[in-house]
Image (cartoon, rainbow, N blue to C red; front, side, top):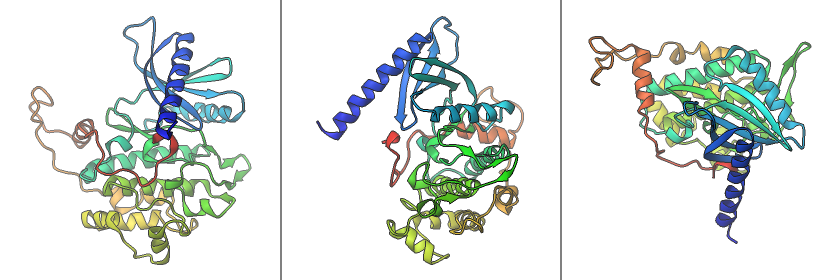
Length: 336
């Protein structure tokens, strides 16, 4: 049996397991989405309510205790209903599975929309929302450890961080501490993840957010992994702070201030890397030149007045194309 046939068979099995679990809990599976190391995900809807909203069900195994951390962290983050964190709705248990129910993002992942022709207005809007979400997560004493475009969902023009399967605490009542390295997805890992046992958690998330910013503007990630032994492009970047490539040239051509921000975020030395607070004080981040308001041309929408910046941004986000110009140089297994 070929690898593709094996993957298809596994997907069929996961689809059936999720459908059966949803049925036991009073839901019907509308669409099977994907599976990874920490669970299998489907879109479901309540059986007895034709007007019920579509929601997401993530099935995780309860045969080990790892799932408890994800639920506990997500529940804690859910307390203030931050607009850039996907909402946790409930959690139910059947046999050896936990079903985690979350809000459904109607525009899918950021990855599914990435296009190098995006306007800087759209990119700036999504990036500020990502940083806002990370600021909240870090403020609660957690780090995500797997920020990537696949784990950033778009719902009605708003970016939402999801999947807390490898999130962990980096701060408690006694203070801050380093976290274990090696969790997440290699193509967005910070360089210290490849050579150190314990690392600064928030600095990992900052690096990954920088990779997402490059991806949004340049249409692709800058290298397959931040490991000089395995990736020649990253080796060049590590040796020369002025190193550039196609993605970096696109960024610099669009706005040199963004390139300065990217180099500060993607600093090799985690102790010198920009913090979330410093990113929020960056000139481009704070002082992005908002476009002039334009009259809406759609019949009946904002009739007789000019759009606000927020309305213009949301309208463009809702009209995002559904295909990506380039594919990732390296994808995680659940997205292949």
